[in-house]
Length: 77
Image 1: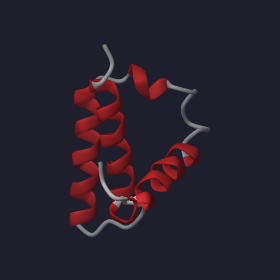
Image 2: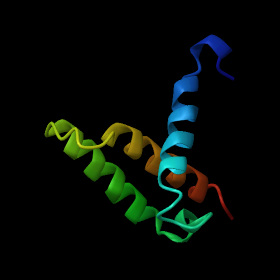
Image 3: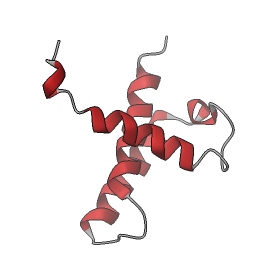
Image 4: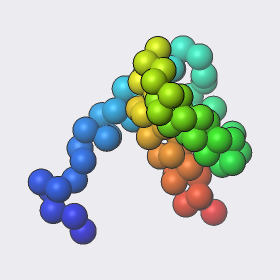
């Protein structure tokens, strides 16, 4: 288990912020109905857009959120 001071707590608040900012676009839990491969594709696209210099949105924040969704979905039975 990681030591508390080594845990990236900012990542948790970032995921929560992205979910909150997009709550008007999607219903509660709608992300659970999206295929894992689609979440991964969106995460890659966000990283790519960040690498290309697009700063119209926080692409790394969105990529992190998508990957967190992938982790949550892969853990489901």
